[in-house]
Length: 122
Image (tube, rainbow, N blue to C red; front, side, top):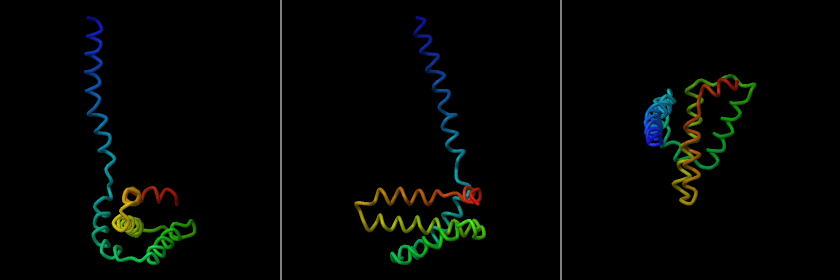
């Protein structure tokens, strides 16, 4: 009888903790998601038409602007680069079906970049 009571109490406490754990996940929502979606919609057609050379130039330009000696990018400029790189990864997933999973993960990685982390690194 005592073990049934202990199991019941443990089960009750376990289920009481679940809403708190899931509430913590929603608190991490991206505050810049609206800007990212706006930039995604704005540049999607342009980037889907990029050649490999265009992408390489974009990628090089982004990392040269991330350099310590360069002035700090604005939030919109930073997200413009990261979203364009994410869109290009989406394009690669469409072109090469066997690389779809890898390109999807890469797209999510670039889409989830945070401007505040960039500022902290400067």
